[in-house]
Length: 212
Ligand SMILES: [Zn+2]
Image (cartoon, rainbow, N blue to C red; front, side, top):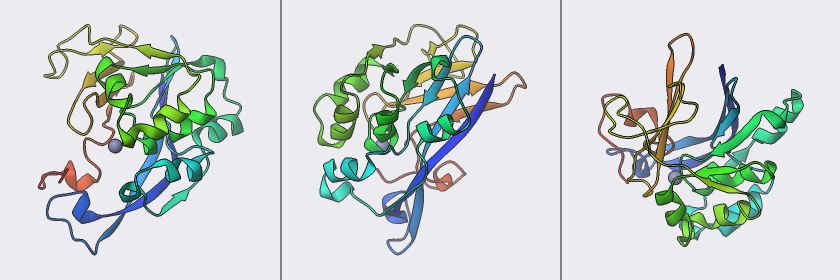
């Protein structure tokens, strides 16, 4: 079992919009990444980052959500470049449905998207999920339930493989169905893919919290 970070680009936002006490003059790069988790029972992509249709996707956003961005290779391009077998991929799990996390779904046609009920409802109508509605068209959407737990103080979770290696938690706030995906490697090292629970490391280290 392994974990791979696939950076697909960055976009720029002012620190004041990201972390309490941040300056309006302080422009910060925000990462748009995908994470591949390889597992003997099937691989998962957590978030999809920027996709090939990024320019079109940005044009779909409300004007106040458009920001300067730099796009690198998409997650699909990076996997194809190393000869990755797409047949291993059992799903894409967005931490939530905002466009900077789901634009890259356009490179994974035929792969199911895993969503919890709350996020599926959130994505159905809100303007900030327009990109998701566009790129998810034609995908199978697979619902998952929070049917096990407790885990790390969270009362319920979804244990993907039943072995505690990939565990999804509901962490609403940024969107109603936002999720954290905990990945524990055989070495014991544990990662938490937090989506937009926070945007900058300032929001995780002992610092004031995020602004919105
Ligand atoms: Zn978001």
